[in-house]
Amino acid sequence: MKKRLSSITWGAVSLVVCVFLLASCEKDETKVSRSKIISRVWIQIDLIASGGGMTQSIFDQEVSPGHQDDLFEFKTNGTFVVTEGATKENEDDPDLVAAGSWQLIDGETKIVIDPDTEPAQTLTIEELTSTSFKAYYIDNTAGFDVKITSVLKAN
Image 1: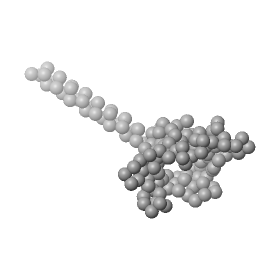
Image 2: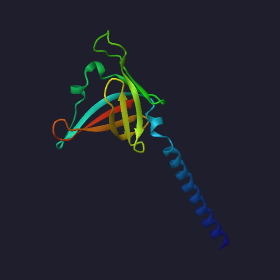
Image 3: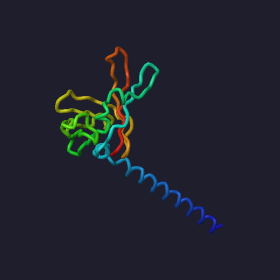
Image 4: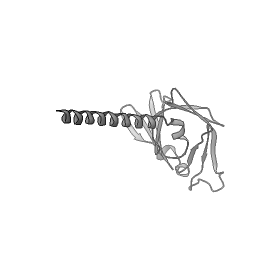
């Protein structure tokens, strides 16, 4: 009986240790702030419009071919730059497309992008991993809500 009790006790202790280790690993992963994950170079791979029961890519219609490979760099100091990719609309165009600042708000669930030459825009973060970034805003310029989602991948 004593041997059986010690095997059960050892099994229970092992289980508790495994649960503790798994829980502590999960906590470590969540400690990485979204600002650290966003701070890298991204390339936009899609732009999706959803509304009125329909969802479709509008990337080719809304983003000219010369800007479909532009690079979006979000820096850790809260600034960003958008630079031309390999394809340019005009060879004489400057490499710098846009620059400004960015910040996370509302518990890191939204990002405010404030270009130097245009009004700031707030997007809700839908997905953020080290390789994928999806954020959206609601556009109602047509008289009804359309969800516009930017899909980026790490470059």
